[in-house]
Image 1: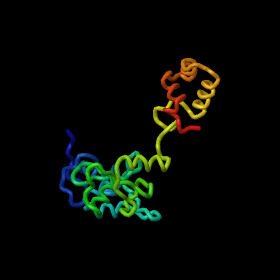
Image 2 (image 1 turned 30 degrees about the horizontal axis):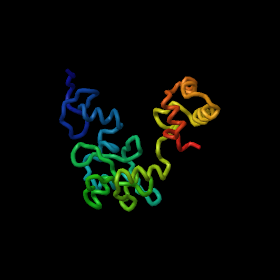
Image 3 (image 1 turned 90 degrees about the vertical axis):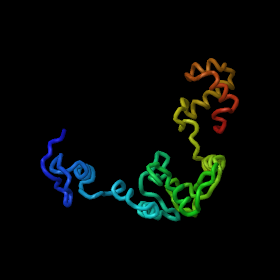
Image 4 (image 1 turned 120 degrees about the horizontal axis):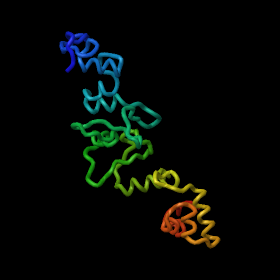
Length: 196
């Protein structure tokens, strides 16, 4: 149990002080932000209406309007919307400007810029349309860039050369420490077929 040492040193705060003369809320703000008032994204965003939040945490970048708040690992902006659930900001921008997203539809970027929230750069489509966009724009994760790949492009060329010289799939599989089925997939173009 914390030892109480009077009231919080923050102006207009009557909460009991528990750490370095401050209440837990103000101590945490001072520790992380260096100020007693809310600073940055966490402090201001939650109190703003969503329209103001989108405006506050975005900036023009060429023709795009880029979200400057938090982004996910794919580069898409996200924030809390209608409760505690995080939503991608380009989807929120679409809903505010054009209404609900129909079931089975996704919001696609024509500008190919994930943090962009400019509704003029967004369009509805299907998941298949979105996958085709990714393929057309060469943004697919394939080959050595794929997280589970055990081969590099040079390895695939070497495997094809060994097979062309008559080596068995078993021999090639042992040489590269992969399965025979992986060798067969390379041989018949089911994997790495895009690589010439």
